[in-house]
Length: 406
Image 1: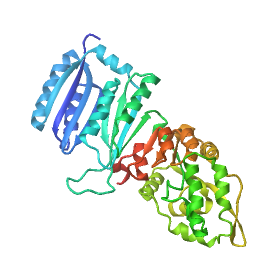
Image 2: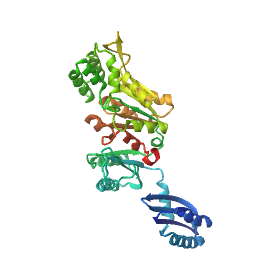
Image 3: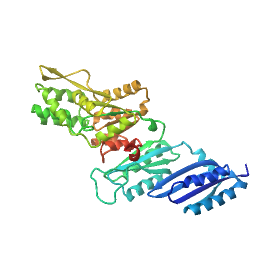
Image 4: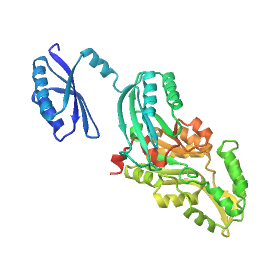
């Protein structure tokens, strides 16, 4: 093997059709073996890297022809010899300690990236790749619903303690108005199949029980119980029973009017359109009411709805409910059952919610996301989305605007 050379070639310059073909055809002519290749384009500039193996006798001819081709194409080329020891060390790092850091907000600036990359270096991680997931930014004008997302693929040999320290550091360096997701880059992240959503204050910008309470004239009483429950101060089942009791005598006809006027949270329509297009199964697991869940199902095509059924007699609410309460424990149980039904591992599921009763399913899912959540939930959940709309979830899944909006 002493007659073997490993050479890294780096090409940069204006991108043009046929450039990569011209350079790789030279390697093919000499039967060089490509060990690694990567290409990226920023604006109109191409950066191409090729790591190849060839014989010592052929290497000089290859580099000479590549140099001439680069000159004719008007690009810069650089050759770097790679030792066998260095190459073998690179191979042994393959597949170990890979993580994804997703930086998301209305706008990302240089200082945001500088802080993240500084923490990455501090903990001994190497950045393998950086890619922009959102569309190209205009030079002027500000869209209040704009989104900016950058994804870092990082790698490093770390123990659990170091990983947690890194995660804490990147969360601490995040400024207000910016979200950071930190995930292990494994087979499950690349094969998510089921997403379960809370409904009230997650899919819609309201608590449906509060809307019913306003119609029944008991708004303040119910709202106080709701807020206490969402903060985790009282048991959900107890609070639910007390709130439903206050709705006794309300005519069911008001439910249709409330459903038609529910404020949909930003990004819901786009998110559902894309999730359905790429084959995700979607579910509403709500501590709210089936009537409103079914309304959203009909409008956006959710595959499953599990919520609470209000008892009705003579066209009026009785102040009681039918069946088992969908509380936090039940949500987690339903998530596991849906995974079994769909034939997937729980690690392939995603759960999204905002309240304390969502924590069990957020903790059970492979990816749990607290969406514009209450303080207790934000402090507990590993992933938080607070700066953009529901379609921000698409970036946590690794989806890119140029692919999904085509």
